[in-house]
Each structure stands twice: as C-alpha cells, then as structure tokens.
Image (cartoon, rainbow, N blue to C red; front, side, top):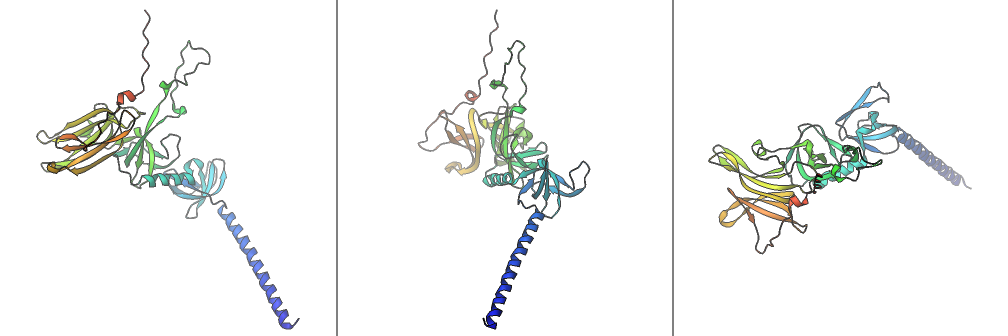
Length: 364
C-alpha cells in the first residue's frame, strides 16, 4: 500500500466517524426536545370565556398565565381532572379538563361554521344570559364558544330534540299501583327543547337553546302576537310617512311550546296605515306546516311595477315540501303562481300535533 492509499483510507475513516457522531448527537438533541415539549403533539382548545393557568395542582396556587375562549394549547401532561399545557407564548401551567375540548371538537365547530357562513339569516336574536354554543342541538353536546349576555346573533335555522332523561321531571306513581310499576314508557312525560343554529359577530356557529334567545322583533309588531311565539320577522319594504320611513313586516308564529314538528304554522303581513299611522294586518294564513328558510326579495310585475315578495316553504298532504311565493302591492298581499302550476292541498298543523288521550267518563 502506498503512502497515498494509506492517507486516503485514514481520511475516509475520519469522515465516517464524524458522520456517525453527528447522527448520534442529532438523535440525542431531538429526543431531548421532545421530552421538553411533552412529546405527544396533542392540542386542546379553551371552551371557557377566560381561565387562569395554575403553577401547581393544589388548593393554593399561583397564576402563571390567562387563556381565553378558543385559544390553542399544547398538552404536556395529565393528572386526574387536570391537564398541563403550554400556550403559544411559552407559558406552562395546569388547567381543569372541563375548560377545554379536544382538537377534533374544534375542527367539527370549524366545519359547522364553514358550512353555514353563507346561509341567509332567518332573523336576529339577543342572548338573555351567558350562553353555550353547542356542536349539535342537544344539552349533552360538546360546547366550545360562548355568547355573552346581550350579544346579538344571526339565526340560521331551527331544530328540536328530546330532553335528556336526567332532565325529565319525576312523575308520581299512583298509590294503588303494583310493585315495580313504571311510567317510563308514557310518552306524556317526555319533554322537548327547541334550538336555534346561530352565527355570531366572529362568524362562529353553534346551537343554542331557543328559550334563552330573544328574537329582535319591534315592540310595535310583537304586541300583536296574541299569545303565540314569534319565530321570525322579516322586513319586506319601507314606506315614507312624513319625515321617516316605516318598515313593513312578514311575521311567522307558532304555538308557545317546544317540540313542534314544524318551524311555524302562521304567517302575517303587517302594513303601515298612512292615515292612522299604525300597523294593520294586511294578510293572515294559519294552520299549515311551515319550514325555514324563508326568502324575501323583490320582483317586477309588469303594470304593477317592482313589488316586495316573500316565499314560504310548506308541507303538502303527501309529505312534500313546496314553495309558495307571495307579493305585496300595498296594502294587498296575493299569491304568485306560474302558468300550469299544480294546485296542491297543504297538510294541517292541527293534525300533526300529538293527540291527547280522551278523558274517561266518571261512573255513576
């Protein structure tokens, strides 16, 4: 072997050793970094308006940071009902499990918001109190975002669901009932909740209990509800009265109870009487099964000119949903039909309600 071959062999050995050493150091560094970061790559999101991170799990602790609704946190450790997390700013501390949701829940809310960001509003509402926004219309569903008391939202659509068993009221068992008697199969004790899918100012969507949301309806219109529940109020147009412009409304109503198998069963159009300076009912339709969404717009009608229009969706006797368009030619409201349109009969709202058991006659 010549001196040149010996030199070349020695250089290759040194290069090989240097490469092996570099790989080993890189592996040690990577493992060390993973240990320092928690190594799981799991993330959670804050579901409460504001939470303090603790420096320890104890009754007495120091606050190390404050996190807010929707903040993304890296999971470092878990102990019972507490989770150790790291904020994007690098602060580390403990947070209770009940104040966070998993990443899959966050992504599901993101999808819900994306799917409904362009859906037309069916009205506006105001939160009566701090209110959870749920992923599905259920009291047991995951919640992420919250509405503050007085916060205004856009209403997208309605749903109804059976109240969980733990929320059902207890029903007394008759004294003369046999041992083991139960009323669990009695449909009369079931309760239902109405829900609104809403969109807030940040375009986050979620389901909220309908009874905890007040519809933003003018007092001048709400006073004509006559004990019915207002499900929606839509401005059809505005007409001048002196130095102001007064809106005219389409108002949808239903019975004041949850769980109805339709969104509304009455429609009223309120127009403004220029002589008496008050609202009057220009059109009223009742006892039908109506469903959202409602369309409001305008259309040209030859000699009549451009008029406000609205379209309702109603169920027919054979269970189909049909659209029925109307026009407002102040102060008259009429159906808009197309040549050859088939005349169909609508299902009755009264027949769709559960029948109450007939009262037994007393023996004489």
